[in-house]
Length: 225
Ligand code: GRF
Image (cartoon, rainbow, N blue to C red; front, side, top):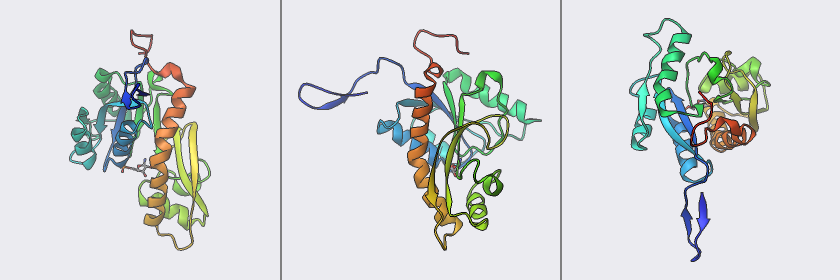
């Protein structure tokens, strides 16, 4: 929390309530992770990234976590026979860090959501859910944007949603639109949507937490878990 001292200087003071503890799941470049770290540093989001898990080894997102001093582990899908056991390994990797919320940040694997994590996992998808479902659902990267362009849409956007047991599905927390401009390539549209995501995701996380204050474990315990 930023407060003004008597001499007018803004300083950080410990907040009365602990920051929400985020575990961030990545699979690649980690641009979303980097944006969350920057948003927290800029106090646009009162939170702390306590752990990062990558579903791929050797990706840039791992370096971003390491540079920021965040514990990072790699849990790949291959050794697991099904999505449920892979998901359990992810939850086991983050549980020691006591996260309140899991943030999917370019995470490309399907999670099976057990009851204890229902309503505690958010994702951002780079098109409008449900409007773009026919075009962009189930894709990632530029294929989402190419599909939106190919279907002749004049509007795209980004959607933050709660993760449930269907891929790119679950209650919408917040979404915003951007125009699809004549002559747009997939990478033009991707850049416009990602710029929107950088502002939208931290805002949506903060909004979700104000709507669900019970998600933040208070110091001294609580019955989460
Ligand atoms: C973005 O398209 C976002 O919507 C999706 O993953 C992409 C970002 O990946 N969830 P990264 O953060 O660059 O790895």
